[in-house]
Length: 133
Image (cartoon, rainbow, N blue to C red):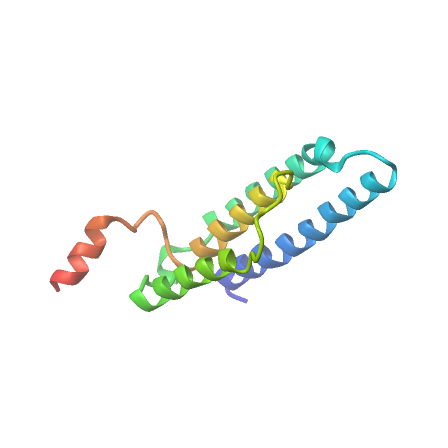
């Protein structure tokens, strides 16, 4: 298996596994009569750090030549995915949501997007140079 594919699968599967584990933790805390919002960082914080470090280590093993080139089509589809994710909220987000889950989702999104494009190479100059060709 290519290291890039392993990287992408690790990002997705670890995200789902961490999400399930953190939600179970919140359920058990609520079951014992405590507010999960007060304890969310005790479990989610170390897991988020381990997730980011592990994914970053795998990312550093990938050759730049194995990454896909950024195209207008893929960038447009990624933007539409982001808009679609925000559009699924049919009511205002509750004031007391879990910040740890939001951070996990942001890490997941950034790493998954980075698996398609190398963000170090993306700049306004790269878009301007492409239009002039």
